[in-house]
Image (cartoon, rainbow, N blue to C red; front, side):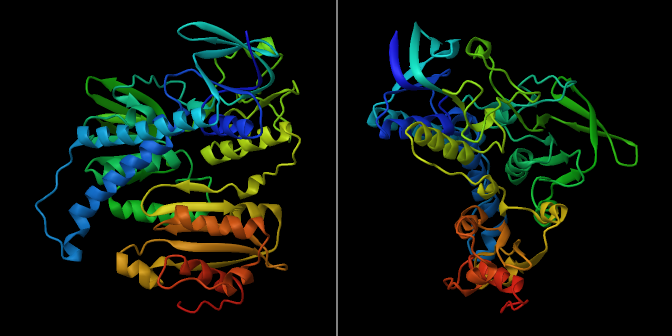
Length: 465
């Protein structure tokens, strides 16, 4: 039996970052990963491969639709789907190799195989050979898996999840997407830009319902303009495959039946915590009614030396949230006083234009009864946006009516995923809208919209609107 200070189960962004920070702090650390590839969902079948395909599809869309406007004339481009997928795989492999290098660099021992508890201090790793690890502390970071509807059978061929959608060898003729959340609109936009007909069926009355409604409305408008079809407030009742055809039946808001027939159906209704095979009972642990492992404010489970982070605990299922928790746990074990403000974990949708948000939505602020004011500024009013042709979108800043402290920072537009970092920094230091309004922003940039929205929030004094 090998002994360690810390054993981390799961090598996704939460797990591998926790292992690195633990090793940096001088702990003898082991990382257990069920699959041969490190990096978890994010690096292998999530964040990284989806962004690779999003960028490839955007290049194709620009070549097809926008090059002429810029005075660039080329023969009509064609999609080579196998090559696009092969490029995506190379991006994934390079990233995974980087994680493997970081484990060696930080002297973290990696064990491949299914990790399960033998008792509260012992983890069995069932790989090519069975290994038993003893640890003072154990961190569970086993992530999540795609959810489905109880009456839908995922066959991974025509009725697929995001995992299979990242490996298609052809552009669908008609992709029916169940779920208009982040994953649904991202992958829907990939295949729409590559030439597929895309229909999104969403149970709620708007897409990306977890975001501020202003962002939902703006993205809906843009994606509709790009040609995506939406069926909102619509409940899916059945999904049936017949050969190479998939038939999706749903009920519209008026009670009428909606029938959508496509060659692929993507089920993207969210994700569920993944703890199968861990044998939690042997460690004295249980899960709640949503499959999550309960933790306290220090991410300790009911067994104090066992921690859980990332998608298996409460909070948004985001890679960067898991990373912060991984660092938090390692530093807490080391006796430090780490800090995470869960209100300041940014959320991003990687469509084009991108959507990004941090802090509270206007709906949440209203519900809490907090007095507030808002400022907005359209991207189309920026010289930089007109120069690049990226005129869709807006910046919305919500501030406290009395103190002017920024409560919510919301962006739709080109590079929104990068722009939101300014909002995170400002809110971490409890900046006011006036603070942002007084900061010089380089011209011409997309970031100028932040200054203008802040000016609009403080006395309606935007300069270019």
